[in-house]
Amino acid sequence: MNYPRFMLPVVFMSLCAVSFAQTDAQKSFDKLKTLAGSWEGRVTTVPPQPDIEGKLMTTSLRVTSMGNAIVHEMTGAGRPDDPITMLYLDGDRLLLTHYCDAGNRPRMTGKTSPDGKSVEFEFLDVAGSTQYGHMHHAVFTAVDANHHIEDWTYMEPGDKPVHAHFDLQRTK
Amino acid sequence: MKSLRFMLSLVLLSLPTLAFAQTDAQKSFEKLKTLAGTWEGTFDGKTMRVSLRVTSMGNTLMHEMAGDGRPDDPISMFTIDGDHLLLTHYCDAGNQPHMVGTVSPDGKTITFNFVNASNLVSSQMGHMQRATFNFIDDDHHTEKWEFAMSNGKEMGGLLDLKRTK
Image (cartoon, rainbow over all chains, first blue to last red; front, side, top):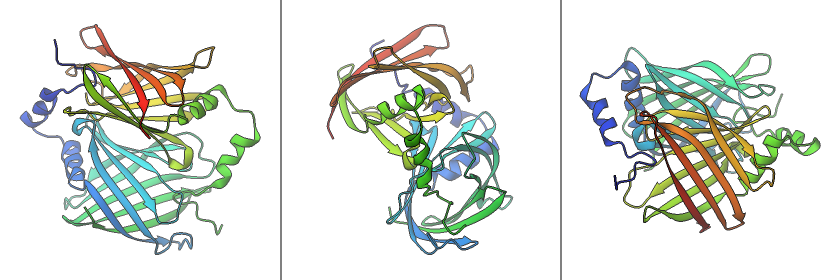
């Protein structure tokens, strides 16, 4: 076969997804895909974190792997942070793996809220050391096509939660 | 603690790697980081581009591949997990193989072999089985990606890559 299947341009795979009824996880995944683009907004924290409180943060979401994954990236002006979060399906589950600046990789499972506006991720497990804590919870809320909110909860050692609220407007 | 640990500007995280002897996995990870940049080569007569980028404050290396006129855009993430160098491949096939890396005795090659995969189902064409990175010089490396098809056969491709940035 001349056409290289290496790296898998498996068009029929996407056809299968269209042909059959979607699972809740697939619906949630497709909802998250509508957030693809570049976003910018201020962060507020509870308890207040002087290092980032009110800072302008930039987020990008990009559909990759021929529609099978979403790459989420967040950076802040003048900050070294650059965590990557991968969102993908595993059977009937919507999963998130957060490649954390802390050096660990928590996984979370996501579900859409009853009103259909939010996808909420609950902690599943974590690979790597949690000596300095770990990301524990995330909620994506679509307000409209150009506005969404992300709420991330980081668990510091001793199970002390730090909540960060990102109010994001689409820039692209 | 005043210093914000959320989003984790934890400078001290990098200190242990400086203070203590590195494991083989850490050494291999640092070697892979030297590939950070953008690369170009050909596969099956078509131009392929690879980018490698250090992210997560040095804790992850992100690999991305795309080709002219091709829809592929797989992402691979390299991380350290204890004494292991791991690769997770977010495959265009829809599964996510996990591979563990070992370095060759001469230090010039790192080979990642399949351990397991998430979202691996029989209706898929198969899964990525092995990835081999060969370091030639600062501006030249090769990548061999081998795919295990569900019918038991294997296919693969060798990318001969030159640095463009």
